[in-house]
Image (cartoon, rainbow, N blue to C red):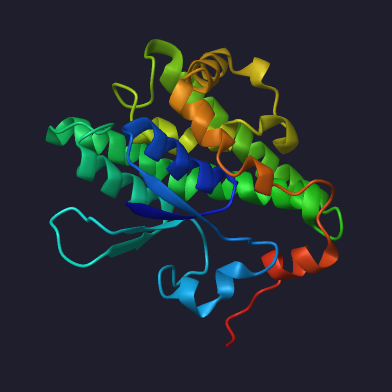
Length: 229
């Protein structure tokens, strides 16, 4: 059994989708990031960067004591290796997937997060910051659209590379993007969204999502942390 420490966000959806795709049983452990659950000592012992998702595999690959893993990209790699699914076994194929996984972790996710922050949550509207990150998300969508012009998926067959990027594209409207500008990307989004396992993964913890605007206290918890005890 795998414990999934989770909140329904794009990074959380990566892992709920993956677990549904590969059919591994898991126990959902909500981490309410608006209330500060990510700073509790018991969670920090699993995820020292105080970010979800994280997992604890009680029947880990290779046996032995329970294995904890944080960072969504590392979790995807582990689950692919554990199950032998959604990642090629040959060197070339494996690193083609790895390239696009790292591209998402280093680019699409952080830039989308910054665009969302400055567009919706910053206490003052800063045009330069809004334009900077909105334009960078647009550029990254263009990279994906060009990549998908002559292939169904980002790196060969459907893989963890697609699972990593998909949740960060579904919120395109709040990031100031028109999906119609990127027809190949739109086709990819529609096809992945139609997968039953993806629908199940997106539905995980739907009842946990907050209704209404974020409070000032929640913003302080999410955006006001420094390196202090």
